[in-house]
Each structure stands twice: as structure tokens, then as C-alpha cells.
Image 1 (cartoon, rainbow, N blue to C red):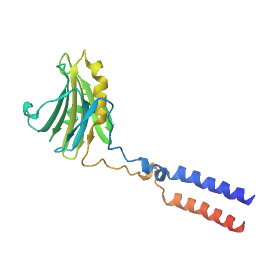
Image 2: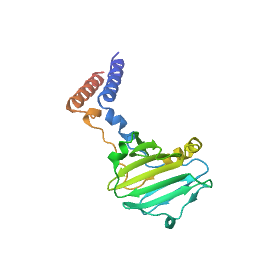
Image 3: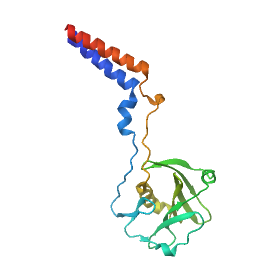
Length: 208
């Protein structure tokens, strides 16, 4: 009978820990992913200067940087194009960007490989349709621009998805999430409650 009582108390302790201290259980899985894998038919473009990489279709071409004109505030651009003209995948690295104006266009918050960004799909002029995501990291902005015609947009949706989901900004590393007291880190009362249950179980075991 006493062994059953002890077993029950141990079970209660486990339940209390899960209910009162979810941070202890979930912390290991709270760190966002910083790596990405590629589907078949894709290859990596790795930019050492600005510490990012992105996957693009193997049959697409990397546009030479000397053929790209950099505007004010643009630190660098990587551009990829298929054989059929009118479609591009670009990564812009900027020293400044109007994030408030960008968000005012409507869209949604996104998280890709541990980085928080903002995504907007818009048409600057017919027949062009653009999907753009901007990430703010320290004093830089990383903007991925997927551009094609409205007619071809659905055809390239999967390509754009694969490229966007592969995008990794390698430095600085994404910030590890630390649970707050509101998220379940045990407080003083919770610790006392668990300690009390452990003490009762220990005493019953000794008497047995």
C-alpha cells in the first residue's frame, strides 16, 4: 500500500513540474533553427561578405555583380534568373530601409530559419507581381525580392517558396529564446511546492 502511495506521489510531482515549470521542459526546443536543407534540383549561393546563403534552382543563372547597379544605401545584391526572361530572385543587403513604409503596404510577420521578418506581396505596375520579405538584423536590412509577371506567378510560387525557406543569415546568430516568468519559469512558491512533495515522498519511503 505504501509503495502505491509513493508511486502516486511521484506521479503528482511529475505533473506539478509540467504544470508549474513548462520552461524547464520546453527550453531545449526553444532555440530557433539556424540551418536549412535544399530540395533536389537546388544549389547554394553563399555570400561570405554579408554572411548569408540562399538556395536557388541549379538551372538558373547568377547575374554578375558588375552588371548590377547599386543605388544609395544598397551594400550588395545577389541576383538569379531563369532562361525565360521576366523573372528574378534577388537578395539585397541595405544599410537603411523604410520598414514602417513597407509594413504600411500590408502583409504579415514571418519567421524563416530563426529570423523574424515581414512579407508583402504587391504589384508595383502591371503586369509585374512581387513577393518581398525584409529582415532587420543589427544595422543591416536583408531584402529578398521574388519578381515575375502576374501570368507566371503561380508557376513560380514553389520556386519562390523553396528559395525563401532556405534563406539563412549566418551572423550574428539568431537570439535564443529565454522563457519569462509569465511563460512558466518556476517562481519561489512553485519551488517550495515541489520541494514539499519530494520531502513527503522521501519520508514515506523511509518509513516503508
